[in-house]
Image (cartoon, rainbow, N blue to C red; front, side, top):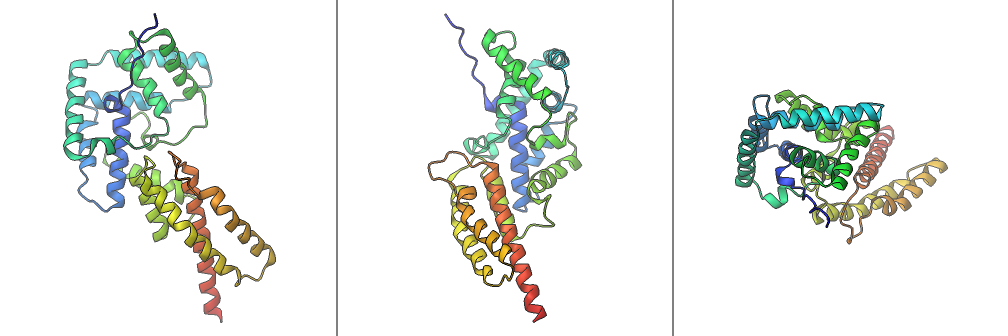
Length: 295
């Protein structure tokens, strides 16, 4: 008879709760909410004096640490788990209960927990090893353990909101850096600044990280306008090669950016490509304005 599989609980996963709160902080910043409840919760619950803060530091350590050897990774994971098991569990459970209660009091829990976190599987593996290490089936323990080994020994990985913090706990300055830099940098690092359309897309992305219909509708609604406006600028371009490239870009918009109504997920690449087309349109408008001034 097979052992019952341990079920992962999002609402009890310290690392995920922190990620969800950071997304809410970012949404608050973009919505110009200067009195963010999520920010207050993070500062109150996740600090070096709380068991939650100490556990979060271990989550971040396992997610961000890198070794080029499986043996080193294996030893490192074992030692981190030992540290986790030395915690004051009754205090940790009490703090987590109060954190969840506070989240429920201030947010729609289903919506709050619906955000997509890129390394969700990794967070789930850490949770299982922290909470149920001695009661996991051999298969589950092996799978969870080697998910961590693979992450630690793989150099190229996706950026999470907590990556800017590393293993240490975030202070006020860290939180502001995370909310402004980590999300805006993803789209803004190649461009000097974002215009209002790009900011609105970014806001829709942050507020709907779970890939709900509103983000799909936002992207699909604006694609025809982007195509139409880019097409309108072609007649003002003299260079044949540039005209060809613009027509190719127009023909590729649906391929790269359009979201199928049946699609459950919107990949980051779709949002980034849409942002790039907005950037192209912005540059075309800028060029057109310059030409008008020289006439």
